[in-house]
Image 1 (cartoon, rainbow, N blue to C red):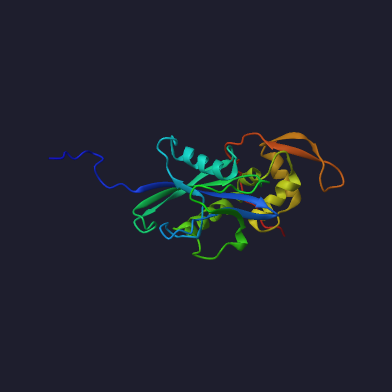
Image 2 (image 1 turned 30 degrees about the horizontal axis):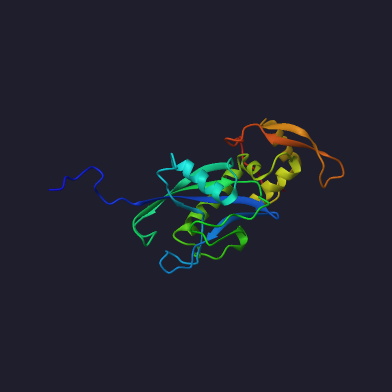
Length: 238
């Protein structure tokens, strides 16, 4: 007679997905991958967020899996990563009960195209205002992407998160432009400069040439591990 062990029961699939944001061509964009067209694969040919199954031999924890998936697609190994949440049900994957643990990443706009391979037939950047369409993504990735956008835009109102979308060194006008792109509206120039410098999270990196007639001071983040929290939110420009 077979003895039942503590692990002798059906277990759900465990995955990690990553919502990867970057600002490219003055638009906030997200990285999507197209699933293979084989009929044996779930959601064949549909666009999806990059991710996949946890590799118990390589991934020490969920964050390590997210970092691995991110590096496989962007060749970037030290971006800002934040856990967004978990989604799980018997309906999200036709192969069986599955749970995904989702992170969102902010990276400086890469020059190289995203990598392909694995279970992705194609990869590309999509502006948030030009996504494939509602309910067009595989699994429940439409819902996950909406949650990531809401989290990012709400936190931008009171944190230094947009700085993670810029290559260093950057100028304050460049940082303000990133804030405006993510928020979708203008912010007051003098108030923005005062707030950024008063929060003491930037280190000077020397003058930088740019579009302005005279060089502007460049800055680097003092700590790239966590964003700075502001005492109040941004107010719309009047």
